[in-house]
Length: 326
Image (tube, rainbow, N blue to C red; front, side, top):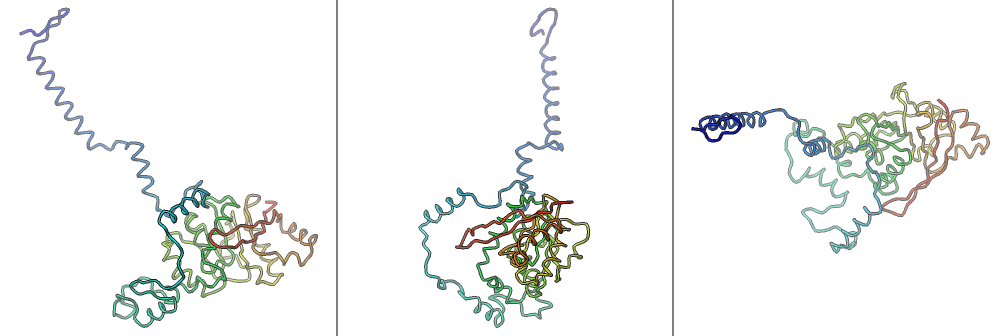
């Protein structure tokens, strides 16, 4: 029977039912296909996935390196809100409070609260580490707090406008007090170091890199002396080269040889060399003669800088140079 009639078009009830049934079947198959298709995910989900793929220690270009005034005020506020006050520096109650010396003795005598009794070759430890390193005795080898390494990193990274893709060479990285922060910030294999001291290198390789979760960054750390840079390759150039107090312990002749080699490894114009504490190797020549010597090496003196520590009453002096010709 006719349901409606308009301009000669007749729609019957059976036809209407058939039409609705076909539409329902089509909608069912459409929804089923959408649930299994490889369709692009929404932009918001894509952003979450992208962030999750980046390890928490990775920096992106443009990320701020040093804390802002607002960051510092936030931290002070958290201390105040929790009613925290610094107590006398004495051992606190705990499971087994110990000084570093006592920790080391415990490791030697008892190995640990829970440990395997098998010989070292079979004790399930992938990278057996000497006790002296495990209790971090090497953190006291610098004459100032270990935390100062972060201060140096922040100053140098910002002063030289580094990005994670920059390449950095440290002369005398020691146990990586500063280097750890560069390694974490830079892309894999972009941090290089020349270090002569074997004990410092053992602390860097056997404790700091694995303990800080930085083995995946594959820094190129080379044992060597006399400013021999040949193991870094002839083609690499650096955005930043720095030496913290290293030149104080070298004869002047070796310093100048080293500066000549470093100048050849520095990116022209934009690359920077920073030398800390003083440049007595230069002042001993006299100002005019020193300038001539730098000019002959293709280096230009930019200026003297100081930066303050975030955590203790200390400032450090740095002298900045650039390569003035290609």
